Length: 247
Image (cartoon, rainbow, N blue to C red):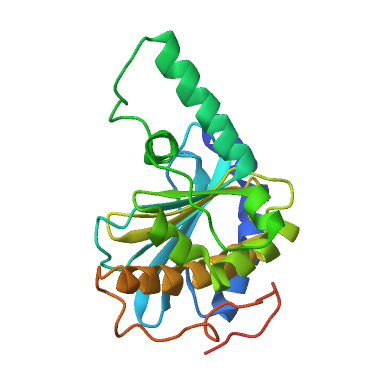
């Protein structure tokens, strides 16, 4: 009984904050569900041009993020050959150091398959020379199995969205990953406080990344992009915590 009461008391502040998130999600016509498992968290469900996406906030699933993280995934049916990665520069540098120390200290010559893709790709794939503002090139690392794919992905709208995010959400260089893997687009961000402004900012960035990934796939002849509608004006673009839902 005492243990149950302690858990209830400990959970109240977080759930109070999540009520604000739940109310905001309802205004945006998004699904909201609290996670009752150990560690807690919540899930938002939505769709972009009829294709579902899922946002989760909870304990980190990656060793390079301490505390909690926000993560989004969306199934697009892209070719598994489309492997593209964007990271904040600080995270890229940290992962490179970690990989170097790990493999030199253990005298390994092969990359362990249990190592997260983010770390493996940093080591395996060449850097992409994207067309973007100088600040974006300096503040982010771009790579991929075929750097031409990554350059197509980032050039234009996504580079501009990253520049905006770098001035706000990513200004302090938190661990941040945006990637295409196994036909999906993933986003992962260290976020201890899941306020609605941060969530809206992440979704706005994700909204740009998704159609750009589809277009990169189409340009590479990997399919999945021919009939994808331009969604630049839909969903969460420039959406603040108290903005009205958009169609």
